[in-house]
Length: 231
Image (cartoon, rainbow, N blue to C red; front, top):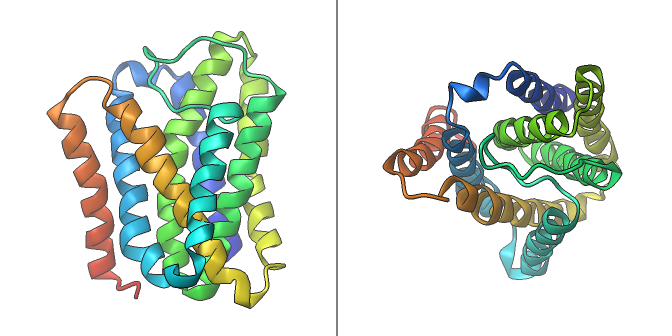
């Protein structure tokens, strides 16, 4: 089941890119999608992941996850953005590598969450899949502006999506005693992506609908938690 969850998360990467290439983002404001994804990431972090982590001993891993993805996003990864806000630039091997590393870590996070509690694995899968929507859309838009062929764009998105199951497979090598530390690392990752990457992008201009989108993303995960208790 854990590999199915990882494959679903990877499929969202490809589907989001395909969606963007249909120019559907011209009809939908990407900032609302970005804001909703941020709300989901933060809700899963605060209500599902952190309660399972041992912050008394693993706080350094929480900080390490935050710092790691701060550096990766600034140096290698693609910054989520809407079509009108995307900076047109060449997407090269470094950006693709950043996407790949992000997906491997997220795949491992899904697996570790599943090993601790299958429903926690499901919650992390939902958060990762929804986060992939703005990331996949952004990657496709930038590649389109860089004059990549449609086939090349979908191939890159498909291959990076396959790295989720790879990450899930590698998570099987993590000793059981290290799983909570990995969970804290994933929490740091999600806090940065949600609060440090997605929220600032969604709030480039004040908009009540953006705020409501963030709250809707958080509310969705709270409702799911109540309907299917994770703890």
